[in-house]
Amino acid sequence: MPDTDSLYRRQIAALYEHSVFYRDKLRAAGFASAAAAGGLADIGSLPFTEKDELRASQAAHPPLGAHAAIDISQAARIYSTSGTSGTPLYIPLTRADVEQWREIGRRTYSRNGLTAGQRVVTTYGAGPFVAGASLAAFEAIGCVHIPVGVGNTERLLTAIQKLAPQALACTPSYALHIAEVAAAKGVSLASIQRIIVGGEPGGGEEGFRRKLEDAWDAKVYEIMGIGDIAASLWGECAAQAGMHFSAEEWIHVELIDPETGAQKQMSDGATGELVYTHLAREAAPLLRFRSRDHAQVWVSKCQCGKTSLRARCIGRTDDMLIVRGVNVFPSAVREVVARFQPKVTGAILIRPRRKTQSCTSKICTKSTRRRFPRWPPRPSLGAERKAPERLPTRLTQSRRSKLRASLARRATTLRGTTRLGVLKPNSLPTRMAVMTSDSPATGISPFTKTWTLAPASPV
Ligand SMILES: [Zn+2]
Image (cartoon, rainbow, N blue to C red; front, side, top):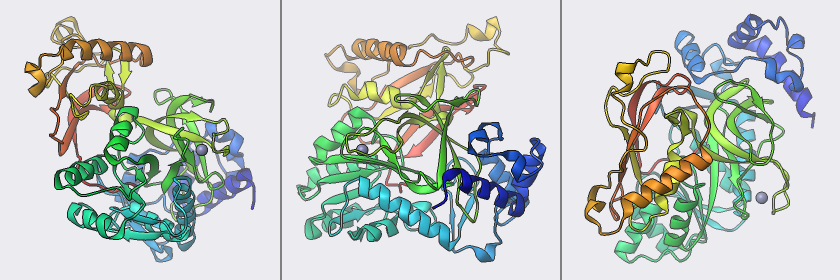
């Protein structure tokens, strides 16, 4: 097996040869040839790849885009992204790429504790999304795989009753939903010892994880993938100390400051945006791809004995709010709210108080500034409003100290504020809205973004 630097140099050479997009991009950045781009130690001087560039490339050069390094006839499989943040993007894989993803998935789910002979029931959609590629991983381990597909709770509960699987893999919100439906119907979930969750935030948040583990009386293991890079790329072990990276020899990971783009040192507890570079991808290799996933990483040896890089996703940098100069991820708010369970569900709704309450520091004037309420506002507690407990005050104080303690990082822009809605117990929402911003760097034009919390497929 060649070392990662040799693989990287070979990958860069392949990009110059087969990808018009990267040849032009690297030449425009001053690297006339693959040799000029240097080795892995010099990767920080190369330009990033943004998702919007891939979309533009595919729109201008259909069907696969000028970034692809193969002709469509050489692809073995073509997935597409979910399109939640724009036009769906096609992701081609060659046979070798498919094999590599299968091995990455095998490692990830093995770290989750799955072994040969165990029964695992999954709700992944095998349709257009890369999550479908994960299905092969269960067979690679030797598991007895029971796919029930997306959104069929009845079929899932029946499978648990009749086939007594030891493991379940689905999204964290759906896992909670299943537990509540099972409790209402009196269905026993006792066979399930481990719940593997991914595809959305929640599995790595302490409060939500505890709730899920209590509801199922089982241990939660988080996984994370990124469609453009690989499915099931990270997987947590029994130590629950962050997800292990499963593709060290095939994918290079960097940590960067999302605002400046500067590389950050990988050290225990360091935070930043994850940036990925393929080292041995054939169909559509990406160079310094900005994931927009904001994560905390660890490099020290895990309790399980493995030394691979570990990470926990804090949130999407796209979803980051900048509140009076402080970066706030919805996950941080969710963690605080979760402490008040079972008085509240733990599901949150963050929305701007006014439609026009944003501005950047550059365009903010005295007259516009006066229109913005101060943070933190009085929380709205919905049905809890009449509750005798002093929940609003405690919530506000707790959230304040949490924000001050852990998120006291200066940012430049949005003088907006948010209104926190706490949903009453036993009312699992099907949609969650979070105020977000078109561009976290400038804070311009916040809008309300919604996600469906109904069953989805992890990647
Ligand atoms: Zn470990």
